[in-house]
Image 1 (cartoon, rainbow, N blue to C red):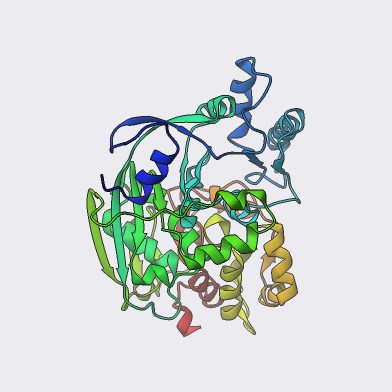
Image 2 (cartoon, rainbow, N blue to C red):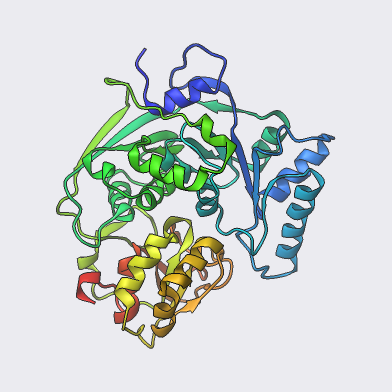
Length: 424
């Protein structure tokens, strides 16, 4: 039986001898994630079940990142509930404000996600960790509570789609552009409950940060997960973040078998690809940046779990150095984690942002979900390195959000209109 990487990982987490797409399996979970929005409901369900002990306090991660710093009393209560649960049940991997950052940037950085793992999280962008050769997917809060109790989850084995990327990327083009181009091709429901496997020569040369961006947005095509086979770039990253952890010995580097089954295969030559921009109000409404020169913006957001990593900040700083944001544009920068914030400070990136007129905010999901620290008003237009641009996603229902890579967002902030970074 020839299996692809997703099927191999899922099979390894069962007691079965074989699995097939469409089958329901019970799988062991390596890590279960909750945040300050989704964990409180899971906590209520967990306590209602009368359970006195979690399945494994080393395999649960709780991160306060969506409404922190707390924007109001209800959000403060949410975070307090998560903190109390973490203390009462001695959860080792609890990250409150000031000790972590945005969950999907933080957990790989902390060495908690490894190749071959099965990770579930009560957040749709849990699919990010597929960049490390893991199977990771979002679930509901009730499912999260059940995993805290049993350490297992019921899953339907997804069919897999294979996306092959060839050619050399042009300047200012990266993982964000590849995934936007792909979603533009297949649509927001083109991979519904499928595993999106990204491969090919262009992928092999992508940095880990670009791979995280790609897998992060698999859900925007309706996918159950996104995944990239672990390779030497993955190994280097894992060794750098997890060398001090006992979990290192459990690394599993799975690869798809030759002639493994796929329900669909797509090939892309990326050698002529321009930076891509998703226009309102869908991540699939994608156009090359050169077609949007006349679009004026009121706000530019650089950060989030999609593009808040150090290479993203370096790219934005490269564009913004010795420049000023347009006087009509609010430029907001959100480092993904405290560690990235510190690294950016040491590299002088924050000076570049501040000199450009940017506001630097703490690591938070805030503006991405229209929560706080960057909410849009009526008819305002933003370009953002975030992952969703649904109507009202970032604020007022009449506002508009364009999605791009960090270089495009930075160049657009300078010009006041959506701009190719090569023209800044």
